[in-house]
Image (cartoon, rainbow, N blue to C red; front, top):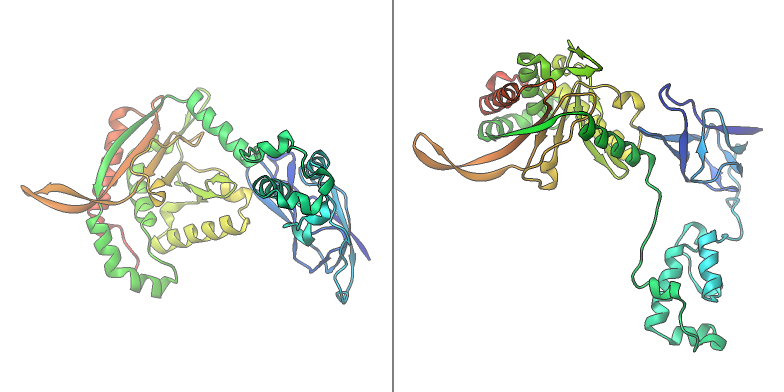
Length: 392
């Protein structure tokens, strides 16, 4: 029985998608549930699973094509038992760019070992071969005596100073568009403060083993910052609001975005009603987002909405930064690396674990006084965290 593999239904706000990559090729055996291809939208990467086991007989859309919901991607013949030998193409075709390099440099492709799937020769294989030929002329004399004294082409010379031009992914393009929009459409300012995290670190070290044993998730730092941010947002509702034209929308809920970096770009999944979550619920939510980001299963719903965002550049070693707003939100909190620093306590110099905090805000809605006081509340909450219950 033949099955048509269609583009899955796209979210209401997404009109089309880009076919990024085929994980299977025509002739391949696939198992039910195998990911056949990746589709990238403006917000998220979607997988196309095989509905049944069988042989992929036809691919209708090439990688790089723009597709819409319900469009035919491929055809699959259902088979109950896998063939003794997987049905594969007997010859790995060359891509247009590889054929061009082969023709320009008069190369016999049979002399090159391809590093692609099924031995497919990639452009990088050709460039590496040409680079080796430049260094070791004997390769030329062994493979093509009649052209051994011919100078390398401009393409071969250029391979020693390689450049690669690739189209921007839709996700990266959308991130770029939103960041530019934030800078152009908001009166963005940033205020800074520092926080002594000794009490948080001591509390975490004291309870982290019991916390993990009870809740089956590790106790991180982000949950403390989410709780402290919610405390501050409750006192300064404008920082949890957004601007819509000439109106201000005050949100009576706290949907906190947690910025996550993926190989395809920055995404901001949302912890819904974070004020209703205890520390374990926050940590489990963050852990689930991390797992989804790694395996590419983040949904559009996971990324939609949000009233306030927290980003942690400290995990990459950032000491100080000015985070950019995530429209239409009017504020974003930036965390940074924790470093031991000398500070004065009770007239004495002591060493404490210090983090610099940054709050970027839209000055059209948030006054500087509110922004400074907001960071002050976060600082106070983190330096005296006993009231931020761990539910242990």
